[in-house]
Image (cartoon, rainbow, N blue to C red; front, top):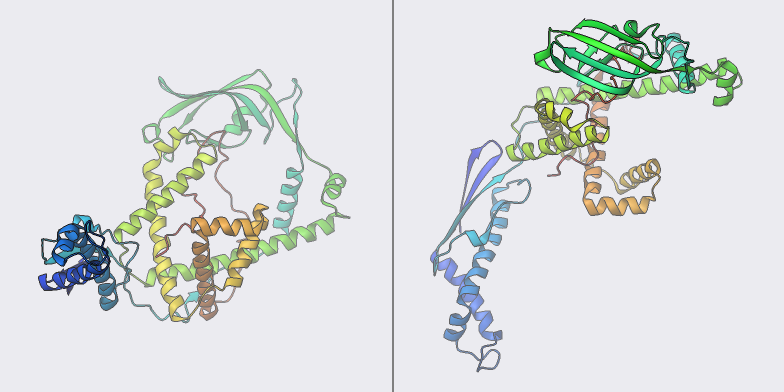
Length: 465
């Protein structure tokens, strides 16, 4: 057997294997010898048929069997001898490989292999992340958010007028020249800055302030350069809203809020909120540190990804993203409009995930880090409790669909990152107000799509290699 390996692309090898006619003949003779002792040929007792009749009767089957066996054995042996770390299953169909009568046999196959790279010195990775702090303002904001979450929506009497943060149910229309961008009936919108059909309406609250049920308000607005539809950017739009219904949040007073949250007084409730905020702050701080470690690895380890694997994983991420958007009620037509942007974001995300997977796997091997059965069992029990499922049933399902293997890999990656963080050079924690909630985008109107990049990582979806 002769084996040749050549590089045809990054992370892609061409394996060429050939057998001489003598090697093929020897293998076929070996099989004919076995058949001669066991084959049933009409007119002869088992094992008594002449060799020439056995060869004539079974030649085609033996040739096909020999070809398949030689290919399988040669492939396994070649991978071991050449020390190739193949990704996925090779696309080898013995029936498509010709083997002339009596040999020789020659074939080649292209294989994707794991990327090769040198690990940098990862002891002392610089990690300088701002330590979020919880301020009195954060606690006050959390208290008001809690109060709002326990509020109820009451319909405003017919004589009432819209106020900031009321909820309007109304007919909304947006028109640019002769183009009707939107004409929607009974849409629910806050009396606040909003984004409708990708158009930010920063003064939407001013448009509706003081409006009564049955009243129609109209305003002309300049469409910003951040509008989703390029052909609308910089143009002027007419926005028209007819108010059909007004609702207002009725907030509970202190006594009602304390009763609902089972606290004796406001100070006790504030202490509880501060503890919760500090716990979240610590979690955010830890996540930022881990992200800093991961980004350092990506910046300092450069290699090409296997193209086919990267494409498959990008498609997986794209499908998860689109599925998530549809689950959240985003119209299909809106998703299709932004599909190119979603696809680009999915490709970037997939590349990052795969690179981190390969890097962390290499470090895990070097540091002898593995996920134990106890750790996997604990994670499954935790997931089962979250989903209110029996842990044994959930485990069976995960074993069946392969996600248990992915879960083990994820646990191992998490352990590797923690070890790297323990070895990192962590800078002094700088005090700041990072724990405060940043001002986010204007709330989206009913039915508006979420940002394209929003795609939480799905457990167990990174392709195992």
